[in-house]
Each structure stands twice: as structure tokens, then as C-alpha cells.
Picture (cartoon, helix red, strand yellow):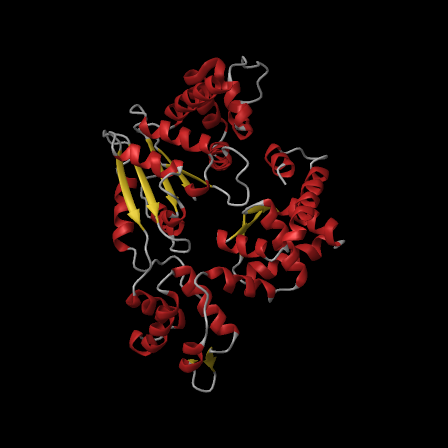
Length: 427
């Protein structure tokens, strides 16, 4: 079992991020934190770990993630973050809802309908409205919406109640989302707002919009904090392995040296490689000697792919077929889906009882490939989603997407959900 709640080789990055968190709302120029690194380096883990170390009770942290396989839906990541915000306000009770509603309406007045039409989740706070916004030209509408959204964020993010917006995987962001984020960051009146974005710097070209906007921000009056999350060192790999197996570092060095050589210190690859060694009995606990033992020659001879995708695909293929099928369906939908909808789709697709479908996915949860997050099944990492999707033969992907979309639409006849509706029609 890998140590939970501990980061390896990230002390400097963690200190920088924690310092930024604790200085939100203090008079200064607009600021942004950009966390970059390769896939599997631990960017989102760093941001969320730093969040847990915040001592401030007045700070609201919301997050969203852009999807590699669902790039057709604009503003999807911002919408997910605002759903978190809405749920948090609702949890605090009616008085908080009324206070927040008043602040929003005071800020954007008659344009509030534009906001709830774009982000239906905000209706939980603002309520249902009957007025219809005036129609304007597309480009003018975009500019108007950016201004309305700026006023909205100003209203809910104050020096006394700061707001942190974390959006993961910016390299897959749509243009409108990036333009809106840029406008928010440049807003000098937004003193209670902090934006944190993470992205794979090896997956963006200089001509892409993201690096162009980053360069514009760095040459403007915006304070940009760049945090690079690189591979961990050989010593950190040894520390991780020693903690995992509960042995002194001097005894695990021979194993960690090989693991580091194979993985180059990519933390996701380290974890998956160690699990594969357990599966193949190259790393095992000896009951006779009451200690962990390993086959150094066998591990050294073990071939490993350049990324975790191949290891993850092999791991998924070791699961029951029903579980594999469920993971493929979830990969078509996105990085997460509520359990009831997913169970309905698996049940109709494979003619299984709902209880059996749920038990099937629990195998993936037990293996650390999926996690339960409230009512949702969530891929632990987007590389796992991509590995599951890669197992669908290319000539079958179109029909599976159509089947998923059709079944989602059927599931919505009794319980309409705007977000799932868009997911269905985009299949």
C-alpha cells in the first residue's frame, strides 16, 4: 500500500504554493499560478495537497478538469467548478444562499439570466428566472459574456471571502474558456480571486493559444508564479519504496536503483511499475522471513514502456470482462459519471442486474483505477481513462459512442440533466 497524504521531492513547490494560498486577498497586482510538467508527474496532486495545508477558513477552493476525449463541450471545466461552488453554498444553508444571490444580482442585475443559461448549476443559488436575454451578434455576445462573468466573480470573490479556481489540463481547454480565464486574471478589481492552472508543457506547441496567452500575461502587469513539477530524484524514489514496504532505505536501495532507471522518476510510472512487479511475483512478501524480497535480475530484465499507458492497459485487461466493459463505457462518457447513470448504461448494454454492474466496477476501485467521489465513479488519472479507451477497437468506437449517447438520453426521460444531455448529444 502506497503511503497516503505524503508527497516526495516536492518540498520547494509545496512551500511556494502554500505561500501563494495564504497571501490571497492582500493588496497586490493580479496573480496566477501555473503548474507545468509531464503527464503523471503529480501536478494536480501537488495543488490539492497544498490546499489541505491551508489554515484559512474563509477561503473557497473549487476545481474543474478539461477532458481529452470530450473537447467539443465549451466551458465544461468552468461549469464543473461552479457546480462545486453552488453545492458548497447550498450546504451552508438558506441565509448563505440568500446573501450570495443578493451579491450576484446586485453585480450583474438583468444579465443574470445569461449566467444561469450558460451554467444551469447556478440556479441552485440564483433561482429560476423568467426574463429572456436580448439576442446579440456572436462576437458581441462573447465579449458581453466575458464582462458578465467578470462581474459575477467580483461579487463572489472578495478579500474577506477569497475564491481559488483550479483548472486541470489546460492543454485541452477550449478557446472561450481560455479567453474568459485570461479576462478574469487581468481584472485588477478581482483582489479576492486566484487562478491556478496545470498543463502538460510537452503537449503544447508555441503556436497554440495557451502559450500565447501565458506569454501575454508574463509581459503584462500580472504576477505569474510558475511551478514546474518534474520527475522525482533517485533518493526520493528510494524514500517512497522504503515507506511502502516498511524497510530502511539502505535495504531498499538495490530495488529503487532499478526502478528509477526504468521509470526516470515519473511518479505515476513508479507506482504502476511497482504494482506490476507485485502482480508478477518479482516483488513479494516472504512469510518465512517476515520481510519483503525481490528478484533484482528479473526486475532488471523486465521491459517497460516509455509511459504508464501500456502498464495500465495490461492491468485493466486483468480485470473481469464486465469491469473492463464498464471502464470502456465510462471512458466514452468522460473522466467521471454518476453511478446511477453508469449502472443504467452497463445494465442495458450487457443485460446485467444493476447490483452486479456495481460490483463489477468495484474491482476497478479496489485496484486503484477508479475511485468513488460522492455519487460519481471517477478515473484516478486521465492516463487510466485513455488506457481504457484505447482498449476499444477503433472500428467499434463510433457504434459504442452512439450506444452510450442513446442510453444516456433514455436515462434522462425521468430525470433531466443538462450536463448529461450535452454529453449524450456529443457522443
